[in-house]
Length: 286
Ligand SMILES: C[S@@+](CC[C@H](N)C(=O)[O-])C[C@H]1O[C@@H](n2cnc3c(N)ncnc32)[C@H](O)[C@@H]1O
Image 1 (cartoon, rainbow, N blue to C red):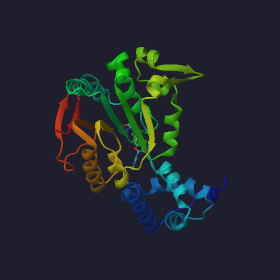
Image 2 (cartoon, rainbow, N blue to C red):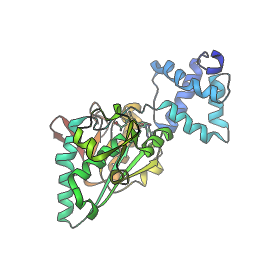
Image 3 (cartoon, rainbow, N blue to C red):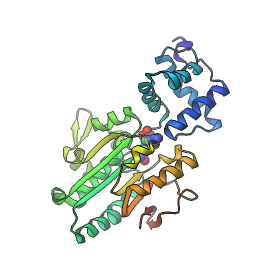
Image 4 (spheres, rainbow, N blue to C red):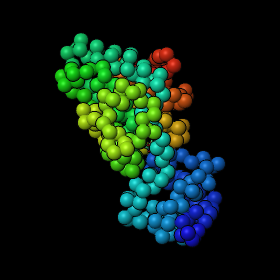
């Protein structure tokens, strides 16, 4: 293949790197540090080719000034996001969710005569996280799930990832950490792959949502539990602070936020009460 056509043969000047990096940051909160120039160059190479552009500077001008750039913006987000995920990722967190947090919320709601649960997987990628939440809810509520008004909102900035999540069909490899009894109960074979059962799939409402869009996030209200795991790592501290403050407002009192197990809210927010579970931390809005 002609290198100049892939875009990968082109180099990004330092000036264009700053322009593109700042543009991506303004739009999404995703921050490419100075040492990530070659990563950005590689990820955007295919966009140059798709748009038949000779260099990265022209790509920047297309994003910034072309009146029809909104579609390209979504393709850009598909290119710059990292969508790695898995079912039952970070087992101690899922255990805390299963054994402590969901039971605590259910028992409080039962006492209050309330039967509504709202969960949010913010940065859900290809769906493994929200479907794991749905499986656990079904395990806890069993047949009484029908007596509850349960909704799991699952959102992402990557349309490509959301399409996979909507498809809800996963390879054997994607199910590698799923215990056999769960695989048996919540997945149905589909050719060489596995499909999530409808009972779980229908609990999940997939939405395109850019977490950096403050006005859009502002209307997300009334959540009992938010998973925003392995998303903040792509933001700089300022974007993290802004966004975590919004997540706090999205939670009900008594609700919990889980972030990635290697992430921390140290120096980002003091609003939450830190709750220690075996091998995992939760952030509670008291
Ligand atoms: C590494 S995946 C994590 C998936 C899942 N939460 C987990 O922990 O397994 C990060 C996801 O965050 C999404 N993301 C990054 N920036 C975002 C933004 N500004 N708004 C919404 N989603 C975003 C990416 O598209 C990606 O799917």
